Amino acid sequence: MKKTASAKKTASAKKAASKAGASKASGTKASASKASGSKASGSKTSAAKKAAKGGAAVKKAPAAKKVAVAPKKATARLKGTAPAKAVVHPPGDESPTALVRRARRINRELAEVFPYAHPELDFENPFQLVVATVLSAQTTDLRVNQTTPSLFAKYPTPEDLAAANPEEVEEILRPCGFFRAKTKSVIGLSKALVEDFGGEVPGRLEDLVKLPGVGRKTAFVVLGNAFGRPGITVDTHFQRLVRRWRWTGESDPDKIEAAVGALFPKSDWTDLSHHVIWHGRRICHARKPACGACPIAPLCPAYGEGETDPEKAKKLLKYEKGGFPGQRLRPPQAYLDAGGTPAPPLGAG
Image (tube, rainbow, N blue to C red; front, side, top):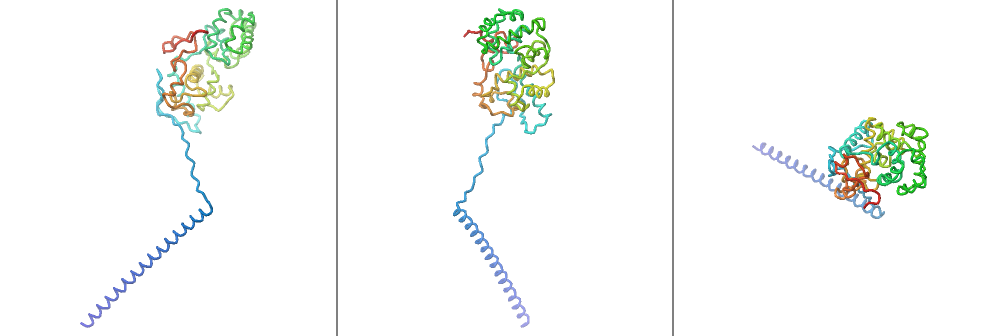
């Protein structure tokens, strides 16, 4: 009995000693943790004090620039306009195949917006068209259309204009601007037609560009619209838009013509020129493009360069898209059927 009681006491003493040891170890750990925390806190406080003392300033990250994003569907509400079906975000490293697809899709969309697109110079024959195109340099087609009726009434053929008194022609052409230089050109090209081509406008590019005042742009206008031969007309509107759309980075008209021509089948070239030029004149202006009323906004890398608010953008639309007369005094019937109105004659209104 004495032995059993002694064993129990011994076991009890060992258990108590074990608890005391654990408690001491726990206290040691807590103390170490507390010391470590105090040390870290002290280090942070010291670093903060040093930074404050040295006048160190913390730089804030610059605010991200807000980028305009084209809507998933075109915001344009133009009569007869079919909006683009989906957004295409052309990347900076757009592949040649992707570029061709996007360019052709833009042309298809514009064909729906401007199904009545046509040359905006009044003419009845190739001679009238080549003269009118030469006169359109550095002025509007509207002003040319208001001026040529008097010119062609008095000089209906190349023979008549070739033999004209320059002073009388200058007086007629005065409203077109640069009337002296233009008089020299139209009389000169008329003489060349009479002397070199039997009074007929040639239907070949290499012959047309030999005429005074006729360059590649004028030649392609004549070939495409008077002879039905495909050509790309690289005027100021065309140059501006194909660069905005990143079809090409070229600035030389001949190089632009080659670059854009490679994106489309030759049969599309003439109508493509009309679509792009009409869009440039009516919606995608040089200074204030109407981005918020643009039917191809989802396809345009330059979306946001102009007014993006739909209501404000509508006020920027020109000609029939803005409810105003067109440029031709005698437009095609398709244009009239689409709601377009003829331009007034010179001096009217």
